[in-house]
Image 1 (cartoon, rainbow, N blue to C red):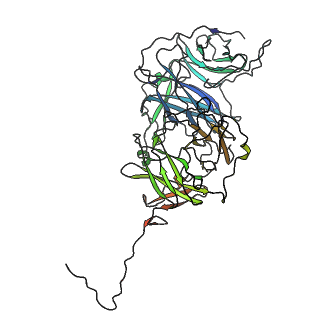
Image 2: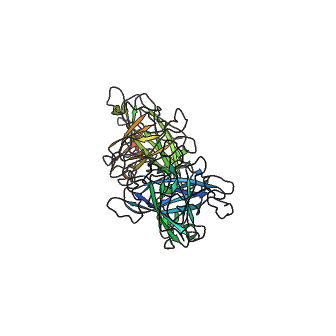
Length: 576
């Protein structure tokens, strides 16, 4: 294959530096592009943004999204590989779904807590029973006379079959590909194309990144690129009059509760709305009152009704995740009703900025201990300084050497490596994390220790089918955090994850019909003197009461008046 590779990056028409973070329309896939993915397989693609005039890192968060897909946003980093003016940034996006079909995915771009722009994409998930209309790459057989280097394109190269809208202008459109060295030299492999109107520019020194320029007046609609003599990826180039950002420029979708999704090939737009906001323009629908006040979140485990596994006389740590009000105010998390023979300490509540969940998510690490084995109950109250708005209750099982203990992970006893471990507040080994989402799965966070050699965050790997660990690093607080997704229709009941080559923690993730929060929704427990504890596996609830309040609904104990016998004599009290 003849290479079409050039010495320098493209020259882009200079523009004024933006005054606020925005999505860029100069690197594809641009908003309105179509990402082609396979069900049950993590699918990666890049989102490129520009910073403000000072070069401040933009804040990229999950925006409105179809309900049956999972989205993880990796850390935003500066992308210095292009010749674009100003400051360009890359946010790698990972998405996965168990349900085939056409989905919508949006990210919000902003500064601090202010959303200044959005980027929405079409995402098409296909499986073996669906027919994809997107291009597919031919099987790579190598070139006669050459030895294949087995090179490939790596994350975050756009997936094979992606559709790039491309403006019919003289400057064309550009996107980046990331080839991985596959030979002994470790040099960046050559990326090549034989198509007219497709130009590949050489990688910048020290980076295996190639910029690809498409001139739609010359290029075919279907173009392919090859990494060395290895992997080939093909893309559709959709020649359009107006790109997505321009189509959405004056469309109101009530940001940040909605975002504009363009279809550049049709020249049309639509709004994508968060829950509780309605089409066509994402105005507020009948809102759940809890969205207006601090509450426990059901999007990260352990969720209410989960079972925490602990050992007697040893401090046991687990996380409680909450969401703030619509203003992002820090929720007030306090000790609630609990079993009398346990001790509970709540660490300060902090913002959990690692997740891509919409809104404001907060973490409260909980430490519990007991000298008495058996099943206990533990609740925390969530609210603001004036009132308690919600509660989260958990089962806590304390084991000792004389009682049944969680099954040891002996099959992994010979694991070797850098002796990575999990740190507080990773859920304890042996805990049960109920999951009610059959298709979209359930999430929890683990906190691995830094690698002993490099100081970087230890890799966390899945040891179970249907369990995906997203490739993220440290959060803004310099903690090492990984998000784990469990798809219960693929995963076994017991799943395991490993930190580096060291510690392994295993959890039971049973599929349930109704989550604990829903079971407790209308159960009266006389808050704050009582709180509802669900058993999602059984579909039942019970109240946990403070001292001097009685089951079943935690009403106060009434003191009966004492009748003093008078033996027939009238008792008269002195008058004042």
